[in-house]
Length: 348
Image (cartoon, rainbow, N blue to C red; front, side, top):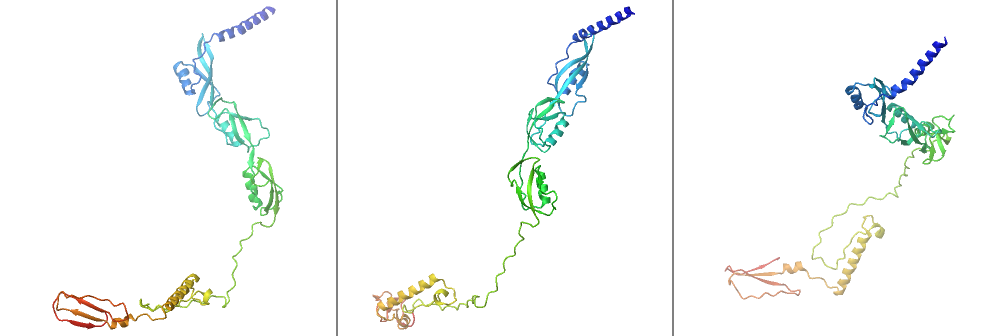
């Protein structure tokens, strides 16, 4: 019995010491570090005929890279199996909420970790390590730095139902509206809108049963104007007679002044009325400067005009005199055609 026990112990010790020596003599696998999993599998399995075991198993979707490889088994110093450790690219998690970032990281084969135990699922990722696009072994965790600040919305004038939804969109809640009706109005809030709170905090509100928004006011109706206040319609303007260019300067033109100057309703601007009055005064002053004489009657002078036409002498020696006084003017017209003389009297 003791002999058998001694033999069994000797065989166990030999097996124990032989296994590490045998494993130490197995050669290392080909260097496939940094290659994609597809490239490493092509080299190890299709070229050398090695069995390939991956960590993790199965291979996550997407592009995976070999971080390291080791010999799994060998026979008579020939490799029969290789274990390959894989890593993947870290997705971009910045700007996501903690809940969404966790789901995205797990989908890519990673976990997440934060040093902020007070963070809630609504906090957002401001930084991450490794950076987006970096490589990390599958199963490892991405370190996240979270930001829980959010802007306080403006709630005054909103119904309780609208205020709850608006606050929830920012990750906030309402305090003081637990038993409120949905149609009550937020009369005041603390902190005011535009401030900053941490996601998960509450906004204190004061409610009112009356809407703070005034109903639309109808435009005031002006009282009906009395007949005395209503402006009288302007009478139609009578056509003015054509003024003759030979009108006597002493005739003072008349024009309707504005209602402010004369009390009439013809609507003549005050400036035009002043010009007309000034022109009339200047005309009257000029007439008095001439001694009150009448201007010569040119129509009468034309009626007394005598026209002498000579047809006898084609080139008579005739001088033409023009009268500048009130006497009739005599004009001599000469034509080269010989003929009789004619005296014509009438209007020119």
